[in-house]
Image (cartoon, rainbow, N blue to C red; front, side, top):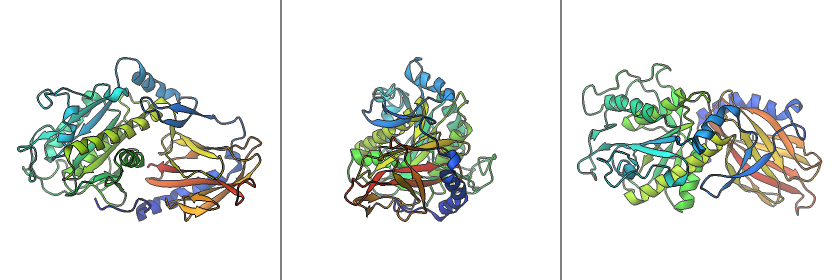
Length: 431
């Protein structure tokens, strides 16, 4: 739970990058993989349902995802999102999203949530008083108990086959919104309240060795950006270098990412695209926590719309200019076996250009603009075609988790300092 500056990457991530870098840079440098004009799909603008936000999305839609796109759009059965709570305020902020009339007598508001095409369900334990500081185990679904959490989690998930899951729990004694990256399959945990006080079995996941890391697959940076856009000054951040703690918080979080991994194949009828954990500050007022939840859901749904509706485009950080060049990286989730296509448009015809690639998000003044991947790990030289476009196809995913920052620098005599800069991308590589 230890916060770290957003531009810092844990040494383990750097080690993973060291393994992935040769293959990725070879792909970027290989002339055989540079698609000529007309070889690669051209990006188009699509407005994400209900958001008014335009994103670059590549055509055509992946055939194996058409089933889910149809499900989301018109079959009458909407895809589900599963949220789970824990100690207050994480349970109270989710109450109106429960479809249990006993827990939510005011009525479920998760049906076709905000008209975005998804049903949102929440599950959480109850505490007396609901404003407790020392809350104990609680009662009902997903009690703060290892056996109860394991016994409840998978039947609840299997009942709605969620396309995404977010587990929430109480965090620091402040008003933070901490998006966790790391959940571990621990062999030993802090004892809970009722014997047996350790998970049974321990570790819970026999499919991987003890202490195996399962990282978040949520659009973590998009969540942070959305919360900050809606609530400027919010204490919201990504925990890249820590973990969810050795108690029930991380245990519940592990169940979420474990479920998602079990159902990550596009051909799975119970396809789950994303899962992860958020620690909610103990002092965060419930109305504000509900607002942060709405922002988090909007970011998640925008991500789901892109994945389920076709290809996923990696996050655009902005910082374009001078010039009119636009950079996109669209395709599969960048996990093992997935690929994506890098596309640059809007450069001067036949211009020389360089892709700056690095592990840090550190905007720095450069040639009249802002260069984001500073220091860079490499500069990959290329040349735009007669239309001012350049594409690199089938960049491989895998070897994560780490985030790679990419930005194009283009020779452009029309600019005051002779160079144009594209927008910067944050390419999120998964295991």
